[in-house]
Amino acid sequence: MNKQRQSLILFLVATFVWTWGFYAPIAIGQHDPYAMPWMIFFILGGMGPSVVGVALVFILFDKEQRIDYFRRCFSVKRIGASWWVVILLTFPIIFGIITLIGQLFGDTLPQMKQFISLMASPLMWPLAAFISFMSGPWSEEFGWRGFALDRFLYQFGVIKGAVGLGLIWAVWHLPLYWMPTTWHAQMGFQLAGFWSFIALNVGLSLIMTWVYLSCNRSILTGLLLHFASNFTGQLFAPVSNSFEILRSILIVAIGLLVCLQMSRNVETQRTRAAASSATD
Image 1 (cartoon, one colour):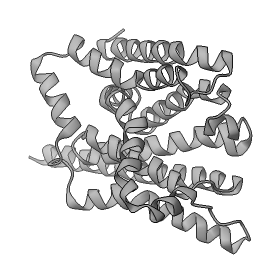
Image 2 (cartoon, helix red, strand yellow):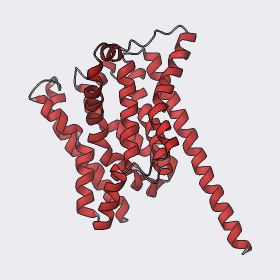
Image 3 (cartoon, helix red, strand yellow):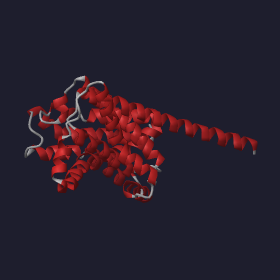
Image 4 (cartoon, helix red, strand yellow):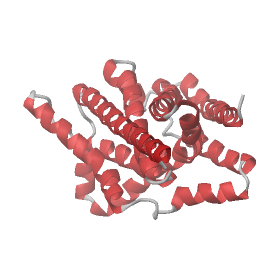
């Protein structure tokens, strides 16, 4: 077994043990994860991917690799102007398109309760954005995109690697479906719940992989896309079941399209380089 695969397995096992270890008492006892003292377990459990990812960076990486890792976590220079547009506008545009499609077929409009509340209290926007950023992107992406993604890509290639990571990312959330007050538990195991959530995570993983590779392996893009997806969803919520399903389908379709196109471009470049060297 090569070192890449060993470190990937170590990351996944440690992340699941960490997170599910903290989540288990909440789920088994049917406690409210947003009430003390269970909120402490909930927060610590959610930090699993980033905690494990960063710990393995210090344990397994040499000095130069660690410096490169943290540069990719925080440097904005890797992200070109056009990619900022992709990061910031992709999900608002997707949600807007789904809303328009829903209206054509008689679906109910998103209730946008948090958006309405924030518009009534504009000073709360920074706090709401900060909480959203810390509760998912910050607590997860130093591990999922920061540590695991490169190893998935090395082992399985772009499409299979991104899909595989997306599936594992979705399953990692499973204990949340037994915590009564979470969104996941309220949606349950219906098509517009757990199953559309799996598809959503796969689609997000594909899109995030596309941007990650296009921005010179910028881990920061993972944090920003995760935030953009979560925060946009929170602003539009609650939405209908058909909205949830269509969102997952559309994001998977976009993710597959951009990753397939990227893979084709890479193969084309390789073919041209091989042809050029053969004629030299």
